[in-house]
Length: 81
Image 1 (cartoon, rainbow, N blue to C red):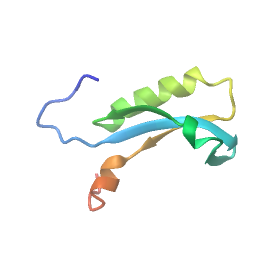
Image 2: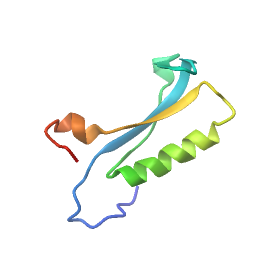
Image 3: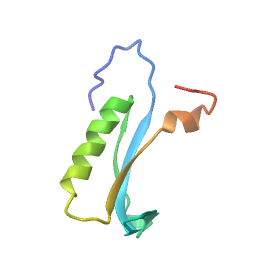
Image 4: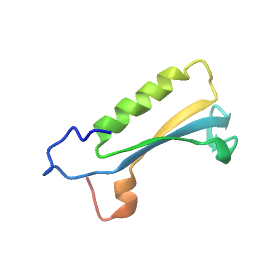
């Protein structure tokens, strides 16, 4: 994945994952072995593009959901960015 930002911009790691839920109203995966790792992105905007593309590609399945994980907050919980 190409870095669309200046090398001096801070990297704010975001992960996009998704898969089939047990029930459309609950964020519980049906099978953790089948969770899809869409990718790792250095900023929210790029992660949102990937999330949107995967979500739109699976719109016909109400049980499929994709999530953006703000991994930079897990790595450094002091970050408020």
